[in-house]
Image (cartoon, rainbow, N blue to C red; front, side, top):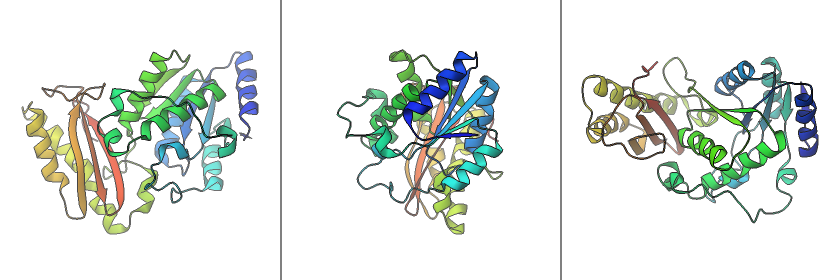
Length: 282
């Protein structure tokens, strides 16, 4: 596995591989890898000849009261996991390499970022899209793979690539879960055993909405109430549960492909999850 820290060297590596006729897949991460990230690598390997993974904790997407300094980091562990999964190139830039100066120009995410996570975390998606745009320019991938757990992020990246004519295909891979249903997340490492059990309320709430819909309920307000009743478990502070379409707009009637999105705090830890109706909750 190659490891590269300089953006210019990363671009040169990708261009050399593409000159040999090889298709480049890209998995951007903030590190502290888990099986969900590694399944994105697996999907990228199905779609490309060479896979680049980036590890970069992006300061632009953290608000002033958020956990940038506390965000878990373990590059040695990330390096070992990436190598075990046959990542071809690990891109690990320093902050100063990607942001040699405070960026005056950022990507404006538009109205799709005004709700849900965007409402809870002002400025978050401008930071996400700005760093993703920079990484696309540096890595120059043919395809980039994102996880669906961060549903709003995945939809915004998809729309950015389309609207700004990035020459990259966006693949959104299913959410990876523990056997008990908890969505894999680097922030799960913050949870103590009691909080870990309480966090299952998010996946149970999604399952309750799915069951209600399969039972014939199509009113999104009634389904949301059903999910919120489950979400409001001991130790859990619900933030939102809503049914939306792929443009993050509230639906007026729940159908197959409506997306149930949820966010809650378990103690001080903020978790998100989602589920597409009709897929069958695993």
